[in-house]
Structure formats: structure tokens, C-alpha cells
Length: 122
Image (cartoon, rainbow, N blue to C red; front, side):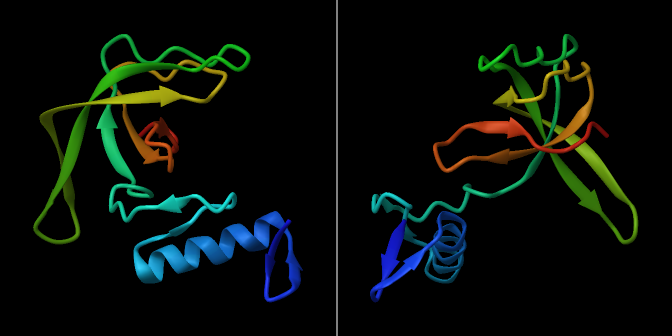
């Protein structure tokens, strides 16, 4: 348990405090006390298009990845258009099912720099 001013904090409470501090200041310490530099990409969700073959399903504790095309949103109002870019991003699949090929998915970035599929295929 982390301690703050002599009060024992649960791991979840400590994590929420760290996340809020990080959002407010752009930097913080992780649960072990390690300094976390400001990184605007951490926590940034982006949309990617998976390659034709998809991303293989997780097997036990082994996760697989593929290079995916980053997509940006273009909008003039209530409608948005997804535009595939030339930027290739490695994306991991944590799910026990294969992510379908040529599918738009939302991805998130862990604090360790691993980008993973975090949303349902679109």
C-alpha cells in the first residue's frame, strides 16, 4: 500500500491520485515511486485500420501484434470521414479472438508504450 501523510491508501486509490496528478501537472510518480515523464501520447486513443490478415488472438499470456495504418478524422460538421494515413503503428491484441482484417479499431497506449486494441471493431 502507498502512504500519504501517514494514511494507508489502497492500490486503486493511489492509482486514481497518480492519474489525476498526472493530468493536472503532466508528470507524476507511478505506484512504485518511479518518475513518469510527461508524454502526451500516453492515454491517447487513436483509430487504426488493421491489415488484411487481422491481428492474431491472444494465446494464454502471449499477445500478438501487427502493423496497422493510423487513421485520422476529417469533419465539416456532424459527419466524420476516416482517412487512412501512411503511418504504420504496431498494435497488440489482448483479446482471445482474432481481430478481423481491414477493420477500424480504437487503440490505447499503456504507460510502458504498448499500443493495444481497446475498442470494438468498427
